[in-house]
Image 1: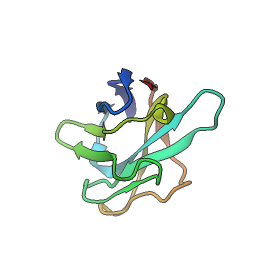
Image 2 (image 1 turned 30 degrees about the vertical axis):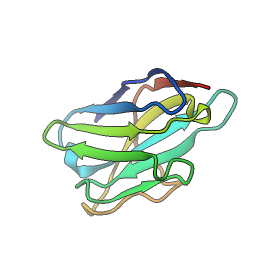
Image 3 (image 1 turned 90 degrees about the vertical axis):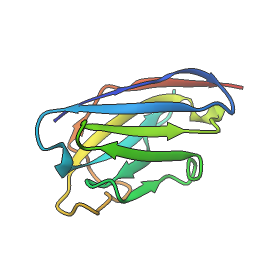
Image 4 (image 1 turned 60 degrees about the horizontal axis):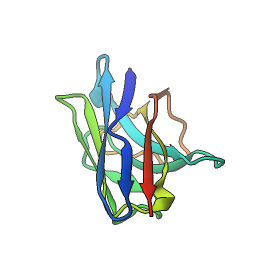
Length: 126
C-alpha cells in the first residue's frame, strides 16, 4: 500500500486543521493506520491510530481531547481532525499503515508500522 498525507499548512494557535491520508493499492481495510509527527530537532512521536474497521482509536496524551480520527474504507482515506492547535503541535505529520489481523485492534504505542507516506507540514503560530 502507498500512502500520501496532505492538508498541512500554517495556522494560528486555537485554529483547526484537517489532515488526510490517502492510500492506493488493494486491501486498505486490512491495515490499521497511524499518525506520527516529527518536530524540528526532535524524534518522531506517535500521535494517533485507528483500527482497520475504524471503530477503535488511540491518541497520545498530548493530543487527547483535541484530535479525532476517522476513516472511510470505501474511499481509502483516513482523516485526522486537529482542533485547538497549539504551537507545540508544529511538526511534519506522517501517516503509516500496518496489517492487523483483527478489525477492532489498534496498534499499541511503539508498534512497528510497515508502510509510511510522505509527510505534510503543520505550523502553528502563537
